[in-house]
Length: 295
Image 1 (cartoon, one colour):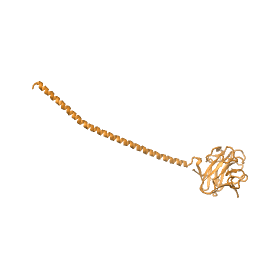
Image 2 (tube, rainbow, N blue to C red):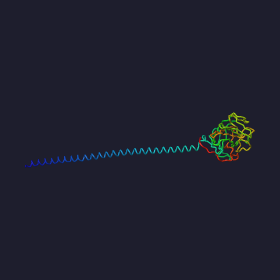
Image 3 (cartoon, one colour):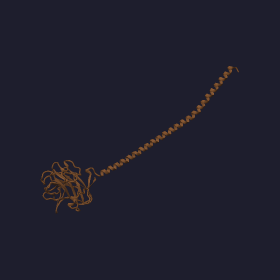
Image 4 (cartoon, rainbow, N blue to C red):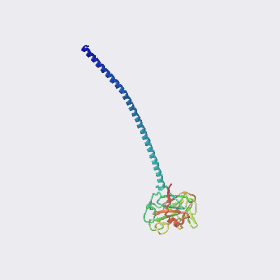
């Protein structure tokens, strides 16, 4: 075979081999691409599954957050419960209820919502508690109801109680001046002054006889006697004919005691209500102050 012819045939053979090689590589490439594509698809699915798992994880976080919020709410409820418990200890004097126990009510006058010209003082050493109240405003000899102090009392043992207060004079040196304030039990079943067989009722109560001296709208003028100006237990009504003070509660329940200003510089420290089970000496010597609850 001539040389040129052999060369041509050799070139054709090489070209054919190259074509086959190219064809074969392409096929292999195609064969390889399909698995690669499958792998990618599997990876994508894994990625999607992973994304789904992340989403569930977020939902789980969301659930955890919800649980945390619920716990916080429970804590808040607990806090509210604590607040309710705290309020039951009574920090607002306007809602104080003084509870009678075993026929005795004993109360510090400063345990009330007071304003106007009532001043809390703590001079000397004969008072009890945080101090005592002194009226430093105008005098209201015939106008009860000014500078009003109110005390809600819960009675569990009905009956007749004697009223007594521990009071003093903080100006001058005359035991008959600056020595009185007004008192009323408007919702009690009876409120009266008694001296032996003599009984007097406040003016405006639709009962008689009435006391000598000032009285109106169910209020008694309550004064103290004697030359000792310091704190003493002295509680009277009816001028020049001293009557002791009594209150009758026919049924268990809450009742309101009212005090209002009359004479300036009259000081009131504490009061006691006691029934027939107590002597005056034991009641006034008691230090068993009434339990305070909330209205």
